[in-house]
Image 1 (cartoon, rainbow, N blue to C red):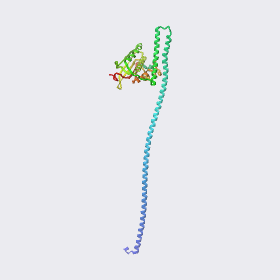
Image 2: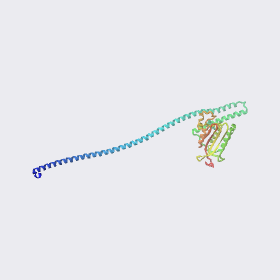
Image 3: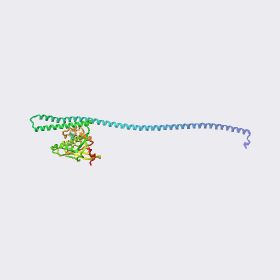
Length: 349
Ligand code: ADP
């Protein structure tokens, strides 16, 4: 009712007010819209920045991962390098130890050689004095024929002793200088053993000792291809020692046929009932020049070369040498050589 009663002016002014309000609302809306656009842009910018930062972080992360891997690799390399260093150090230490040992060996070898030379001149001078002394006595015209024969025998023995020492020195220097050769020939082992038996029998009889020889193969089959000089030297040396170091009882020598690593070998032995060899010396007696260095109350005349030459000869022939001995009871020396018969090959049938 009131509006109906409103005047046209009043309505017009109301309308104008409304229009003004609408205008101001419009302006506000526009401003708000503009603000929204700006806010939106800001947000977009911030998003872009965030994206960029995220990318940078991803790259930084990758970089870190890579660096970690590199570090890991480097650590592994360092571990390997460290191990190598430890190994090299150990090798150096080992080499230093070896050098010390080699030096000690060289010094010991020098000492042994000097002692050996001193011993050797004694060993040569004694029989030499014997020869000269007996020759002097023989000048005496009053000697009976029997006495002359006795002195001649003593001269001969001294000569033989000297010759055997000189032969041993020649052998050892040939071995040391690498000039020793192997001369293979056919040899009847049984005949060689008989020869040795015959040459030592008189000495054994004089000592009142039993002497026997064992031959395990029949004639023909006992013929082998070997170095006769070396076999003879080894056997005579072992038998000589057996006689030298035994005063009673018996000596037996010979061979058996054995199989070693599927190969036929002749296993020689020289067995005595002599003084025996203490356990702690059983290895040393095979070493060169060793007797010269041993203060051995039981050592008898000898150059201390025989066993080292025998060992070298056995090795030249492809065999082994060893012993079994008990002090006061006796010794058995063994050595092997391959059984190479020119008639039956390697087999014993
Ligand atoms: P040597 O000329 O002194 O006999 P070897 O080399 O033949 O030299 O022997 C070395 C050492 O071995 C000897 O000095 C001796 O002590 C010991 N020996 C060797 N054979 C025997 C044995 N059958 N019985 C006891 N001792 C032995």
